[in-house]
Amino acid sequence: MKNLCVLVMAAGKGTRMKSATPKVLHNILDRPIIDYVLGCVVDAGVSPEDVAVLVGSGGELVEKHLRENFPKELNILWQREQLGTGHAVKSAREWWRNYKNLIVLNGDVPLIKPESLENFINEFNNDCTVISFNAQDPKQYGRIIRKENSVSIVEYKDASDEQRKIHEVNAGCYAFKVEALASVIDLITNDNAQKEYYLPDALALMNEKGMSTGAFIFSEEEMQGINNHSELAEATRVINRRINEKWLIEGVRMIDPDSVYISPDAKLSRGVVVMPNVQIWGRTEVGENSYIGSGSILTNAKIGENVQIIAYAVIENSELKNNSKAGPFCYIRENSCLEEKAFAGKFVELKKSHIGENSKVPHLSYMGDATLGHDVNIGAGSITCNYDGQNKNKTFIGNNCFVGSDTMFVAPVELADGAATAAGSVITQSVPEDSLGVGRARQTNIKGWSLLHNHLKKTERG
Ligand code: UD1
Ligand code: MG
Image (cartoon, rainbow, N blue to C red; front, side):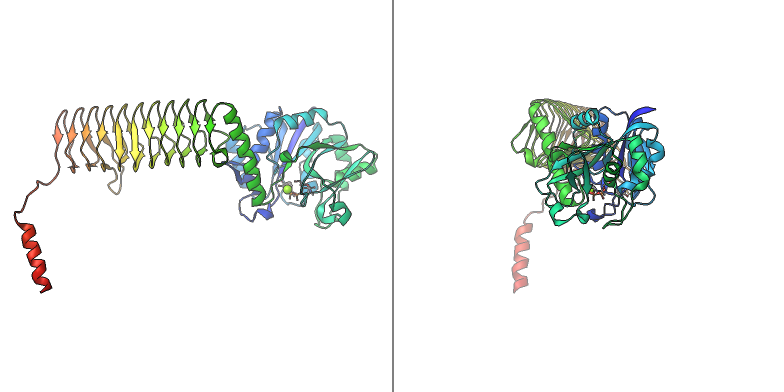
């Protein structure tokens, strides 16, 4: 018989979220609530094969998420009807009966820290030990009723006015000796205000049988449950503070950390400066001494060292190599890349484009499906016309090319090394090495035109 398993309850409807999305899939920063709970369990040293998540309401979505994001050893169990937390634990009996000890966690407590959970796992010794905390505002949490040698729980909706005054509350996490739990689980009834089978009733039943019960006090910050969007926002604030604090200690500078949002999956390096109102999502990595200017949003971006992101840059699934520079106001997306010392400036969009070393796209340009060599200069307002209505076509611009302002590249088209285009050209044919492509109508000057024009205007007015 194995020693210990953890059951995470995530089958509830989450009615108070007022959302079609299952409660545990609501995001804190860019990861769902359930990921924080499971992350904590695994970091506390429990192997995924000894962990089960109980799904039910919206369970297909939860199951899909877990299958895609967690090791396949993680167990997923179903509670087909949601009749309360007591019923939830009972539905998983076939699984936990093979262990000596069972930890039950509410799926909606994402702030619990691994070191605290590990400590709890090592310390509990009653037939049931519940995690409690002293709440400033005890809201609708179950109240802890302490007697000399035992603990029981009364749900808020069933509590007397006197009991509601108690500030020590049930966090929704329990350690059970499996043998003890098995002897009371079938005795839990739904004879209460919510007509639900309450897991907390297990404690009173154990007390009646002379078994031992106790409460283990955690900090309030760690045990906040999430039942509505207000509590979700509060938990997000706590996680955000924890993540930013970690990076500040690691040597990242932020002048207003409360306005900066960093995914738990992102990695920053020392010397990085993150200015106010920045969001850094997904598996973004930022190398040493890079600067992320205000209002920038980075998602799965790979930022090298000494990169300057001036301000208001949106960068998605793209790479900016060492000493490159971007912004203000640019959009770099879909596997684009700025090689070393390359630059994408004001009102520039790059899509699936590769900008070679030391090449510059400084102003008002769209480069889509384009490959630029090194030391290229793209004049202001130049654009790749990459879409013909059916296909996306490629533009190749060789090394040391000089593109005049307002050039339209009608793709597929190519500029060989050292080629140039005249300003205002529509380039429909490839330009050979070291040549100038001119693709514009010749200018004609009509002498005296303005005088004639003004005269006509006057006579019109009479
Ligand atoms: C529960 C506790 C309460 C405690 C609070 C702490 C009960 C009866 N009450 O109340 O004492 O103070 O947590 O946050 O347990 N779930 C299922 N199946 C069900 C019902 C619930 O899996 O049939 C899951 C939910 O998905 C959730 C967890 O159990 O993750 C708790 O359910 P919730 O409805 O949030 O219980 P609370 O009212 O918060
Ligand atoms: Mg809850």
